[in-house]
Image (cartoon, rainbow, N blue to C red; front, side):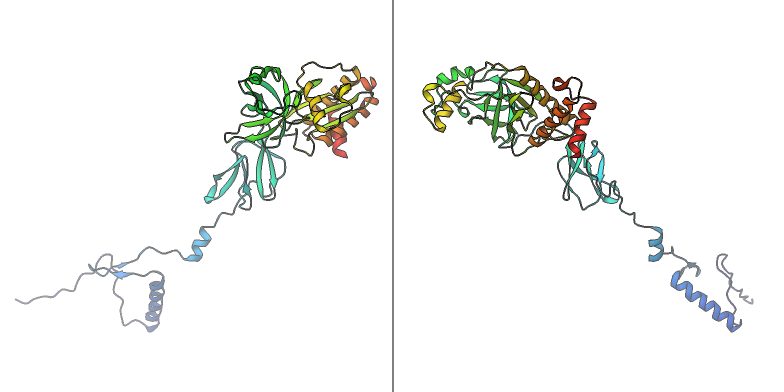
Length: 383
């Protein structure tokens, strides 16, 4: 029986075989196209029937760079302005050249960037490359050497507890005050029993921060002639160091101002904690038997003998009027966001006296609120 050999059937997916007797130009063109495809689309032959498998195209570097472009750095404020008010959680800047200070923290921004963010409501301040946020209203943070004005709120066995506007009450030990007569000796049980004769609840004192605890508490002392119980004046509380306009640390916190309009000398005490005391200046009264004796020790004995008195002296109406005028100057400075120090208070008082002269009421006009306060602040800032 004869055997018939049939030609093999072509696969449905396989392209028909190319005739080798074609023109040489076609062969060369096909070879050229195959070589180009082999570079950009490498393939192979399947084991089942020689079907060409085309792998996934790889994206070239140029195409990748044109498709995926790096997002440029975006700063909320490329140049951080001074005195910019921010709120908690508000992003200040993403520029890495700035360092974070008090009142800020680092938060994650887009594309792994770090942003300096405000942690409280306040004003952005710049110190070289350091960004900080000064709170609009803040508690006083004691520092060693600060002059503060406080109020006695509690009397204990060997110390007083003083409110100085901080997060904690300050301590005034019995051993940190001057005894009457300037006596230098160890405190005894008798002194502890008579502790309320020195300072009682509600008394106002001016003292200096002597020591700080790790928890932020402060220890005060009054071992000086300019420290002790306050009387013959008026007390006012403004914002201290920490935020906004208010009392700032300066060269002198206590000075005597010569008042106009027969007001006499007036003492001004600017506590760094924001408590202000304005009072009539009282010279120490030296007894007749002590006038012939000279020396610092005798003066301390005379002054300290009356420094714990709670009796106010007589204050003339002219002095009370000028005290009220100085109080109005301090209030106007704070309301208009200006600093409160010796220079500004002195200039503000002189300007207030000039404003009163052109008023209808004359020197009796001590009102410095509203438009008068703004006028006073504008005159001080224009200098």
